Length: 86
Image (cartoon, rainbow, N blue to C red; front, side):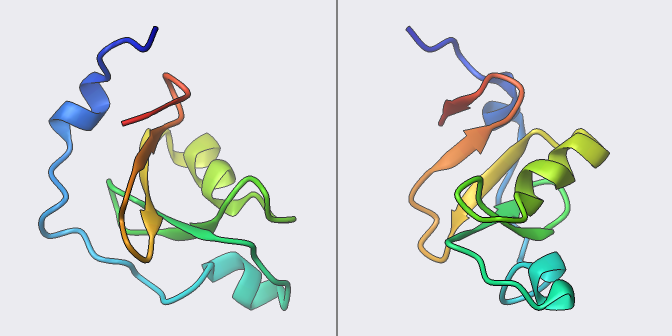
C-alpha cells in the first residue's frame, strides 16, 4: 500500500518548465536516452532509469530534489524518496 507522499502534495508544478528539450547530460556525452523526466524543484531534464545514463536519478542523488515528472505529456510523477508514483 502506498503512503501519502508529502513531496507530491507540497510541490506546485506551475512555473516549473524544462531547462532543456532533452537529457542535458546525455546531450553533452553524445549518448541516447529511452525517456526523459523533469525535476519539479528546478526544471532539470534527465533520462530515465531505463537509459544508460540514469541522469534523472543522479540529479536526485546530487541535489535531494525528490520529485520528477514524466515528459513530454506529464502523465505521472515519481518520488525518489518514497519510490512511488504520484
